[in-house]
Every structure is written in structure tokens, then in C-alpha cells.
Image 1: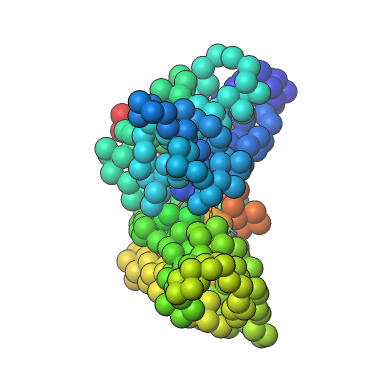
Image 2 (image 1 turned 90 degrees about the horizontal axis):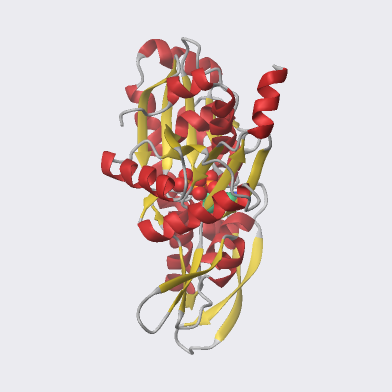
Length: 346
Ligand SMILES: Nc1ncnc2c1ncn2[C@@H]1O[C@H](COP(=O)(O)OP(=O)(O)OP(=O)(O)O)[C@@H](O)[C@H]1O
């Protein structure tokens, strides 16, 4: 135990939740050392070359606010790498940050990937991490990491249903005996909810709002199921007819209607998982209920809606946004667990 602790102190192994919305890094022996939006601001020069100007929170501030020569990019889209080069630059930056920019031995890295991604996409993630300096790369499927991070007894011969609602994807998985018995990944998550709010503002008010404003509306007054009292907030955007900045008030009922379509896709994915779960494991889930993780789990009353729709108890993980990185971080301390749950097809 003491030896393990000491090894942890000197090791530079990392676990990374490379998410569509946020990237979290866990360093062995230290815990979460970095949690930043997955955004990179790139400056283009006259010859078409690209230079990374900012990464993370600073780059997210620039989204939708950049002059012509700078672009703020989200290199991950729908849970997968949309821009390989920028993802690699982002990973390199986060790895350096996690190590306080000290050049140490090349780390062993555990990276979480959505369960629905193809072998080609997996190879892209693996190569990105290798290019960014990893000595050895292990891939773990997000719902497995989320289940470990949420403290579910994944190794027991008993069914656990985990729903991880991220920015780009929602992963629904039934886990038993350290394996995924059934999984469903839909490319709908927080981003699609933001898009639905942008569309609603355009359609109903002729008001153009940016994705950051839409996200703020969702996090402030967005709900999946009616609340006791309606909430309101002021929203600023650009009037599409007059072309001028405008402020107006929106309420939680209309935002709930706007969110209905993406939220229903999530509910349907959970229903499908329940229908396809082997009966013995279904019986376990009836007792233990559904566990929600990922930032989308924080959408108000999503747990209540799922409870109404399935008749099952629904719990939200203690720290839903960190569940995936905490779960993958835990595998750095338990090499046996890592070998059991990692995708070792390479
Ligand atoms: N209070 C809140 N209410 C609703 N949504 C929220 C809240 N807080 C965060 N979110 C949403 O959670 C999403 C980010 O969650 P998370 O960090 O788990 O995703 P990710 O891991 O980056 O994505 P993916 O798993 O798809 O790769 C964003 O869409 C964000 O807007």
C-alpha cells in the first residue's frame, strides 16, 4: 500500500476524458489536475499555416467573437475527433499542463471514448495520444468509466444501468461482471439541446443567439419536466429583422418545449436499452435503478422525466461531470481492473 502510494507520487500516468464539451485530466496520485472546455483558438497566417493561440477556457471565451484571422475550434464533434491536428495540439497542451510543463518520462495514458465509435475513430484517438507524447495508450469506453466513477459495483454478477449524457453523445449501458452487456450510443447530448434553443429563439422571436448564450439559457432555466414554478431570464441577441442588438425575456416552459426533441431521443435510448436487457439483469435494475452521469445529467428534472417514463428509481452520480475521469483515474491505481475493462484490440 505504502509502496503503491510512493509509486503514485513518482508516476506521471494520466487518465483523460477527452470530451466533446470538456476535457478532464486525472494524474495518478494527485486526482483531477485539469478541467477545461475542449476548445482551441487558432491563428491563421497569410500562407495558410495554423498556430495555436489559446486552449481551454480562454479559447471558449473567444467562440463566436473572433476576428477573421483567428478561429475558435471545437475539435471534437458528436463525441469523436473532427479535427485530428487540433485535437493532437489540444492533448499535447493538456498533458503538458498536467505535468506542470516538466518534461518527464513519457506517460501511460488511459483515454475514454464513446462506446459507439468505430475502429477507425479509435485509431485516431490512439494515434493522437501517441503523437502527443504517450508511451502506452489504453482506451476505455465512457459508460464503463462513468460507472466506475459513480461507484457502481461493476465487477459483481449483477446488472447496472448507467446513462452518461455528455455534450456530443449520450451513452446508455448495462454493465455486469466488468463487461458491457448492452450499450447504445446516440449522437445527441448537450450540444443538440443548445442548437434546439438557438432554433427556438430564431423561429419564435427572430432573435439570433450564439451557442454560448444558448448553453447559458439551458443551464439556467432549461428543464426536462415541468417545475413547480416557471422561471424566466433575460436573453440578449441580434434581431434578425432590424439587425440590431435586442434583449427579451424567455421562460422555462417554452425552453422545455424547445428541448423536447433532443430530450426524447435520450429517453428513447434508455427505453431501448431496457427492452434489450436480459431478464435477470433487468430484475437487478428494477431494484438498483438508473444512474445518471455526464454534464447533461444536470439538466433540471431529467431524473424526474426518466423516472416517469420508465417507472424505475433514477439517481444522479455525486459529481456527474467528473464521473468519467474519476472512473478512468481509478484504473490507473488498479492495473488488473484496467486490463479487464480496457479495449485491447490493438
Ligand atoms: N446545469 C446544467 N444543465 C444542463 N446541462 C448542463 C449543465 N451543466 C453542464 N451541462 C452540459 O453538459 C455538457 C457537458 O457535459 P460533459 O462534460 O459530461 O460532456 P463531454 O464529456 O465533454 O461530452 P461527450 O461525453 O459527448 O464527449 C454540455 O453540453 C453542458 O452544456
